[in-house]
Image 1 (tube, rainbow, N blue to C red):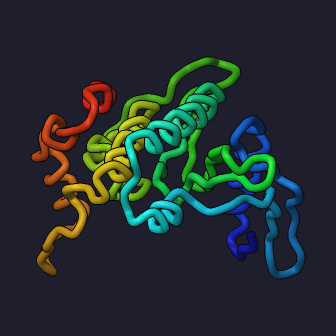
Image 2 (image 1 turned 90 degrees about the vertical axis):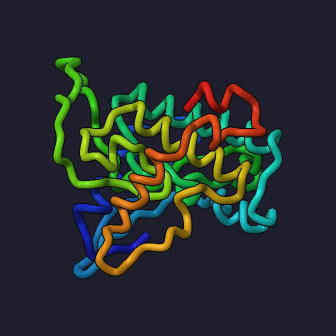
Amino acid sequence: MISENNNLLETEAYRLIFLKGEGIPKVLCYGSNKKYNILVLQLLGKSLEQLFNVCGRKLSLKTTCILGIQMLERIKFVHQNYHLHRDIKPDNFVMGINDYENKVFIIDFGLSKKYKSNSKGTHIPFKTNKNMTGTARYCSINTHLGFEQSRRDDLESIGYVLMYFLKGVLPWQGLRIKPEDDQYVKICEKKQIVKLNELCAEFPSKQLIFL
């Protein structure tokens, strides 16, 4: 990974080193020359979005459950270390290679944020009027509404990703949006209109309970 944005790579390197653990890419080298900042990570395989496309843009319930369990294990580890990911999407989960070919890794911590102080143990305060951070297709409704993100928002995003794998498309994809309309506002409105029992229809009730 090579970038001219020092802050972005520094954040990524710091998060990965701090979060060192199972399913987190290893940082092999980090540094800079006169022009570029360089971050070298453990070599990994295809993203879940790429594999989703290879599989005809729909996954079986069994495959989705296997992936979902590992995704939840990864975000649980991140949360236990006082961090939020804030950009949960299929592109940010990748499969390992060789001895790790059946393991899901979580990547891209450029938008991550600490939600709790290590020393004081205090949680970040609730705030409103925040700019949207993350990917509109998968971000939580509260993120759209400008509320400070917390652990629940990462989990809601995972719920949307799992339904995306099962259904092949989410109801707020491909909306017809007029030039004068705000795309993010329209996606938020659709998410609020769609009832969860309709979104999760024909799938196990555990998915509805999770969301």
